[in-house]
Length: 92
Image 1 (cartoon, rainbow, N blue to C red):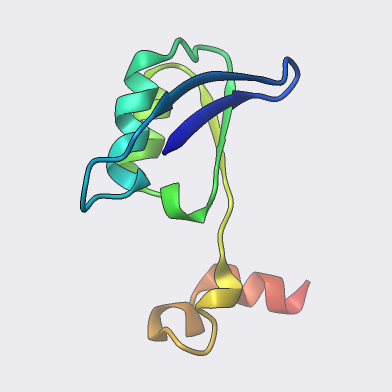
Image 2: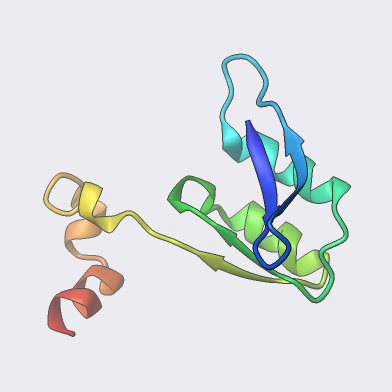
């Protein structure tokens, strides 16, 4: 289940059930299509940190903030070992 939550109003603006054998990566763009988000800031957790999702948000004239779950990958994923973002957080 993917939900769109309005923080200031404490309201669920929309929900979409993920398809069987699928995940929120495929459901988020469909939910975004149902919402008027122009001028809003959309925040999404690490699972939704996808280029196509960011492009969809920008296309709808909104801004986005994605969270990253780097701690899950540091040390176990070769890509993240040399990632500039990981280096930044290690030094700041």
